[in-house]
Length: 470
Ligand SMILES: CN(C)c1ccc(C(=O)NC[C@H]2N[C@H](CO)[C@@H](O)[C@@H]2O)cc1
Image (cartoon, rainbow, N blue to C red):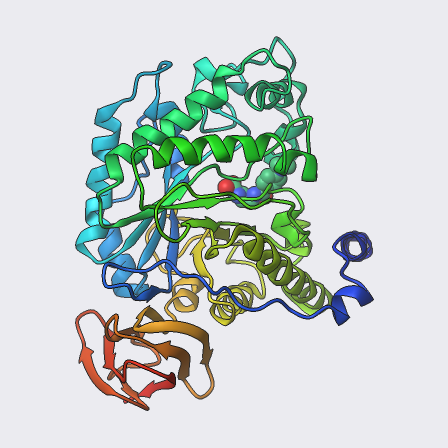
């Protein structure tokens, strides 16, 4: 029965996403052409985790994550990126006052990543608006209490699943006030945009911080779909971009489409946003990916796997179309699942291969201990460690065209248009590359400590670099 319901749901999705014959004949858009670059100008491939969901509920709004945890993460998986969760409630505890001690603690953790050559995207995280949607703080995170206006409308606490809170009258009202749908609290959006200005003023010169993810999984309340994304959501983004750029001309600004539907592969209506900076725009797209069949509780096996793969194709094509409109790089801000379920490692590898193929960065959800994470509650590594310990080009001395890793032959192939920015750096995990790697072109140097192969090549022309185990 469940599979029949599932197939029906995804078939509906197929029609909605134009995923029928039309999608089959419509050409797949080109891979992402824009990249976040490092201080040498090399194109970055961002590979890492969301750190961490625990920040949603800790009193100080910081993840329960230590520097030793980061050392282990690098040793085991060689990541170079983090989507670091921050909380508006901790940043702006009362209207217009910013907690500089909170920002100091965030900066302390950013410094851990900087010391290890990581790149950090700060994520103003919310789910369900904020923890004050119920008197007992039973659910929700992000917004401060002073910004939470339910007007006495009910928020029951007996939902079968957490996401159903989004449909509670009180939660919808809180969002309607924020988006100025009610017209009663026009100040809220302004506070949010100015909170971003405070973050940007603090981190604008931090070399590890590549940029800001303006709002996690936006929910329009009474307004949904294109009306939301081109309406109040676009207004919030424009006002936040202006506030950030008033203090920070260079950090990347990442925008999320609405979560509902788009996480599954439906198209987003997110419009283009001008970037009031000198030089090329630095506005990127940071969508999430949670395939509907898996969201409905099925595993990445048999019939559900085939449907999931079809929705992954829709997600890829629709994301690339939105990215063309936004005009910047794509960082897949979240993907993840219960790693104890059958087929989970295959799904993770499928998504890593897909993001390689179209030049997207990616952050797994999430770094927290438990069935979704790399380690269990006692720190024992699970199957995700092997899946995330994957060869990838940390930085490319040119403009990437394509990346592909073939597990059988253990060959990583990078096609790029070489330039003068510097050598290409490739992370090689111990399992497949116990003695390091060899390069098909150029001059290679192996750093066994960091497990990084650095390859100096010609600085012009289209090159194909293949790395195989030494
Ligand atoms: C109805 N709405 C608005 C909704 C439903 C479901 C999700 C979701 O599953 N999100 C996936 C993961 N992302 C968050 C953190 O950003 C995690 O808690 C979810 O598992 C989001 C929104």
